[in-house]
Length: 340
Image (cartoon, rainbow, N blue to C red; front, side, top):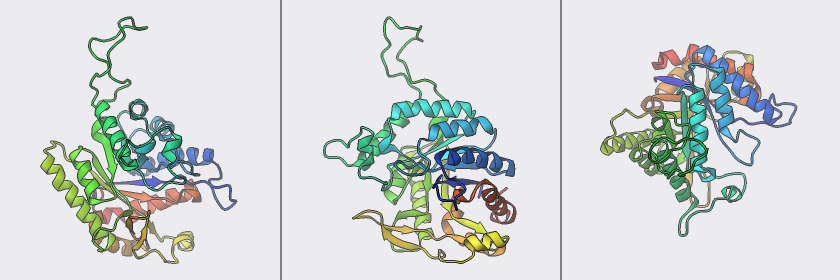
């Protein structure tokens, strides 16, 4: 395991039991948690994107703010739903955030998952092509996004511009060199993992994937990662790709940890349907004393296959407690798994 970061869904609720009672709380605490995670030595601060929900949504203001407050930690998403995105405008936003962070952006994108509302992307002004699906539309938006990130000119300049132009066709600005190689695809199936490899994207695999073989989650996920790497090699890409998996992992260090996570209930995979036709398998969570966690995670084939582990954090418990959660893993579990 080369890198360990955190992944926050950015939930908020006005409930008095929550430490994040507003969208402002979630945004500001996300910045504070990223700063604290960098001080602990964590490698990444990643944020989920959901629309029409009391969660983090528009990612680029947050990514830019985190980039301005930190200097080393990777800053990413897991994932941006491309069905909702204008890929050209997104390329400008991403370029700006990456330049502010001096090249630390790691953008996870995807065709998206079931959302809070029916066909929410239609409210954003998008609809699938005739005869196509919303998944096709999401992947098409991703392809356009990847293409413009190459930095090649494609727009014919005005012969009488307001400002002088460089020669030739114009590209989108601001352009950030190297960002194209730091785009990740959140794959829910083996086939989309192979597609991501062919397109030259890194791979993000979460705690949810299509149940394609009936085997335990971590075995199916490990097979997905191997299929991705085989497809990457077959595509002839020159660089080495990166692969991340996410896990809910809690070291039981004190009475608070045991009160929150020591009661069990998530030690087994679960199976369900995320839509009418897709049977999915949800990976188990981990909560135990450090010695037991080390043994359990060492037996997780997908964790062993990946180079990056993203720890999902209970952001509504507040920054201080989440710093404790991350620090416990980094100090008492991660070194035994080969980190650092």
